[in-house]
Amino acid sequence: MKAVLQRVTEASVSVDSAVVGEISNGICILFCAARGDSDDDARYFAQKIAKMRIFSDENGKTNLDVNEVKGKILAISQFTLAAQWRKGNRPGFSHAEAPERANALYEIFCSELRSQGLDVEVGVFAAEMEVRIVNDGPFTIVMDSRD
Image 1: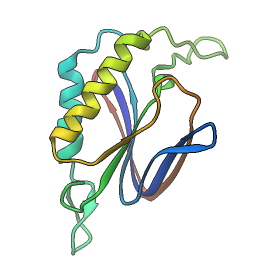
Image 2 (image 1 turned 30 degrees about the vertical axis):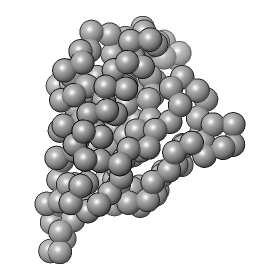
Image 3 (image 1 turned 120 degrees about the vertical axis):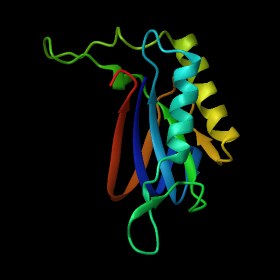
Image 4 (image 1 turned 45 degrees about the vertical axis):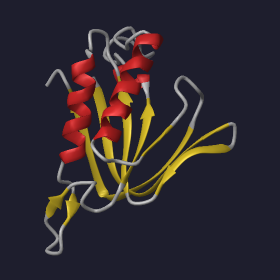
C-alpha cells in the first residue's frame, strides 16, 4: 500500500468539470492499493495518518494532527503510485491491486479515517479526475507499507 500525503491550504477533485470533493485546511491523500495488501493495512494507514503530527503549533513546531487543527481529508485513489518504471520507458502497473479489490481497500481506508473523527471528501474511483492541490509548506510525505 502506498499513500502520498500533502498538507494543504486547499484541494479539490473534479470529474467531467464538476467538483466532487474539496477541502480547505487539511491533508490531500493519494492512495494506492498494491497486490497483496490487506484490510488491516488500509486500517493501519488511516489510523497512522489521523494521528500524524504534521501541523504547526503556536511555536511553529509540527506537533498537531489533522483533528487538532480541525482539518479535513481529501482522499483520492491513484493506482499509478504502483508504477514499475525501471525497465523501459513505459511504466507498468501489474503491482497495483485489481480494481474491485482496490476499491474495497480504498473504501475501508476512507471509512477508518471517518471513524477517527475526520471529515473525509473523496474522488470517484477509477474515473478520470482533475486534482488541484495547494501544498502548504510544501509538506509532503510518502508512505509505503513495504518499508
